[in-house]
Image (tube, rainbow, N blue to C red; front, side, top):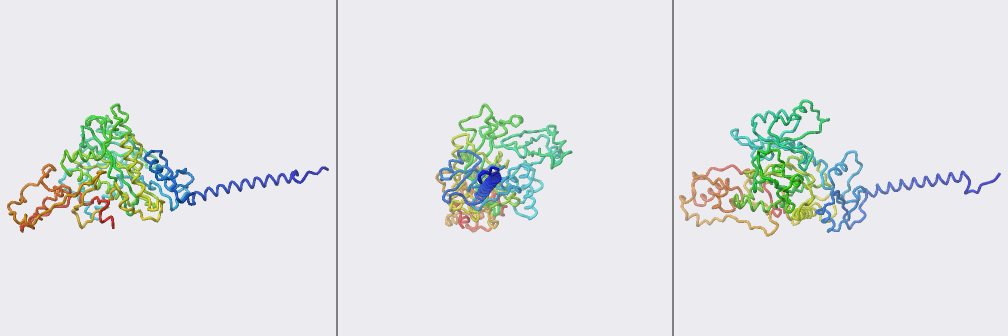
Length: 543
């Protein structure tokens, strides 16, 4: 019988193949284990920050690259800074996802930011916020008397009337019908809850156009029906410039919700419609919707300026047309509106220490210079349509990065997220005002990028006041100025705060210095006294 060599024996070959297969399997397991450990371990370089992004936009990439950051894929988990889309962020924070973020990682979305971006949830949170303040007896929940006529907001709140009257369809259809019969000539705007860029928005002035929701209201099952939308009373008296409607796009940075640390970017832009406003033509979206994605489909769309106007141009226009100081009053009202919206969602937000978020606020101003919150975007577009638009968004990201990163430049979940005031640059910190000091003498934030304007203070000479008789002082029976144009004779310090309500306190002060014994009855605090916009260089912040 012929013998096989030891290496050629069938049993030896079988053992050899088994050993090779076992070694190959071990190598595959080792490679997977090493890849998993590498995804949870520290980054490859301690000197350079690794970033990943889902958006290939110049405003993002230019700021990342000029800092010397290196781009890595998002799926291997080696990144330190991740500018992600909302879908990937929800996947990372999902319950069924095994990935856990390291202490040196940061991402640009909070886990449940949908509480702000989804229209029906935002309305629910604001309504709950109002009821909580009213239950606690908070001064912010004060209301006008019953004789006060209800406006677009449908409430009598002095400080909390920040959104138009809104119902969720189809659940609130019966409430909508009841309100519609009170004013059949009113116009309403319907918006899908989970869509953006003006998709699915239309105006109605008849209940017959809502038959679909009338049927769904009778057969509505929340677990199966996802085609929900909100219907709001249409703001039919918007502020027009050149006969065209516009809204504001502002940016707000939130680094933590507990405690709430929010920063309002002083720059922004106005988005104009391409056609002049006409309330009767409710089917023409080019005169009612300001979304760029809709307006750029019109033949009259101007690609040079893109239908956008810098905020500085709006302030100059308002100060020249409505009187000096009007822009400052409007800016304070906008800041109060933003602060209330953030306070409304703060209790329900998942405050993860690895997160920050840049929100895009859409605000419409009516003809009475009252701001109305339209919606909030958790992923504001970084796409640039014009040169000015590209430069503005590049400055925004360049200002965001030093605020959200600690002084070491590497994310750290133990950092208290309190940046140095010099790093805020064009951001303004939003802080609640002390209730013991309802009348604030602080100026609104400087919105100009260039040189700041000096603060003008009221100076009263005691000798001059004593030489003036009481008969020369304005009488309390005289009618106070009711418009900004009539108050140009007053000092700027008065006009910058609350001109219509600060006049009697100034007269009281003058009478006390002059020796008068007939004080003017006190006046209630102005609506903007609930919250003030503290400057980034204020003593309160430096402490």
